[in-house]
Length: 257
Image 1 (tube, rainbow, N blue to C red):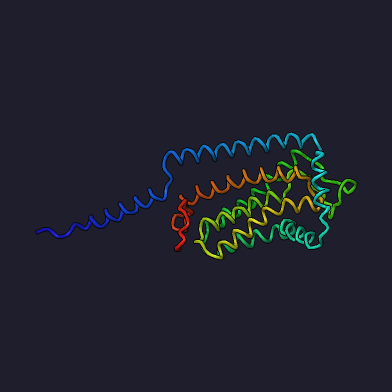
Image 2 (image 1 turned 90 degrees about the vertical axis):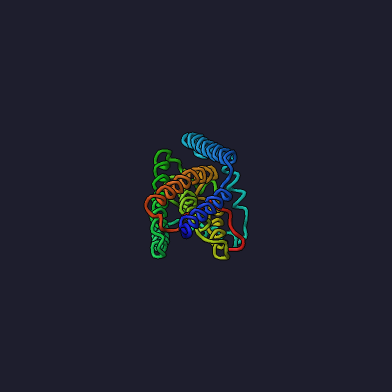
């Protein structure tokens, strides 16, 4: 009389795993729809950035730029002004170098080796693309004869380096917090913190008179494109070199976790 087949429990476990994967994965038509939507968004973002870059190349600033800056600078609340200064502070050297190095080292120390490598790539790529476009466009910064400039900077204006850096580097950290951490207060705080930084930095650059609104808009577009490329790079390397570490999934958060 033959004993129990040891392959049966394994097959059952595999079937359950496949069923769970199918349940957590969007249907084929929905995946196609989301893919087309995502690709369309990338094309629209890239086209908008290219168009705005061409305009910035030939125009020092637009009338709407001047109006937006003057409207924002009418906010006379000292607390708002201090907040704008604080928001921009991480983007100035030396802290713009120290903060990424510290956070990359922290990820490495936590055992998230590929995450630390990808975060470093995000920080470097944000600066590289920003400098590349700045040198190609060479747009002058706002002058004190037009708006209030809190601090004179000698680099070019388009795009805003602060915004590109925040969108790419802090945006990548936001992605890691969302993808790797279970739903929790810590996760919510990290996502909110990085998200607020990314959202407010554009306003702060205009309020401080160091960029036009079109500089900021171009930086958000360039930053989004660079962030998508960095996330794709992270996912590519994760599957090949660091499969034993946490892998971000598309599963919906489990409220019971």
